Length: 178
Image 1 (cartoon, rainbow, N blue to C red):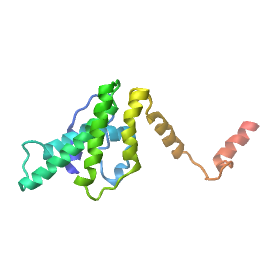
Image 2 (cartoon, rainbow, N blue to C red; image 1 turned 45 degrees about the horizontal axis):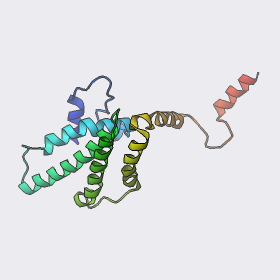
Image 3 (cartoon, helix red, strand yellow; image 1 turned 30 degrees about the vertical axis):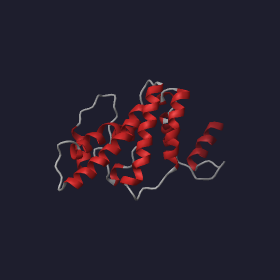
Image 4 (spheres, rainbow, N blue to C red; image 1 turned 60 degrees about the vertical axis):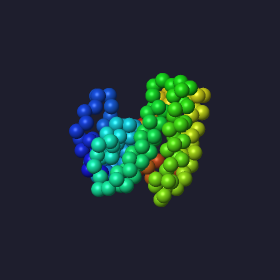
């Protein structure tokens, strides 16, 4: 985890790329938003893992080195799929490459991580290929703007009673009627 934090702290990125919390992984950092996960998985995580497990790195034994390299290759398959899915333009070749990478990731997940279980979102990830072919680049139909609005709504005060305003709202409504 420390290597990932070091990469986040020392990597210089273009100004249009949103960073992630410098204390990523700490409870105080909170949970990442979808766009922060995309940045983490396409920039910081590959840099950190390649520097730890890539060609030329040393490990206690050749078996451990080979295991880490398999995990790195597996991670890079999903990173490649994410990069292809998030491109501003797409083509049939990009969609096909996406499907290949995500299929490799899903296929090898339980082999490399036996504790992992199958999830519905892995099945849905396979359908992104269809969506790329039908609707074009993910950027034109992803939900980041809606997630931002949902986040704002979640931060609003409420009393969890449908149809009954929060006290400060009823004062506002009363003042508006006068």
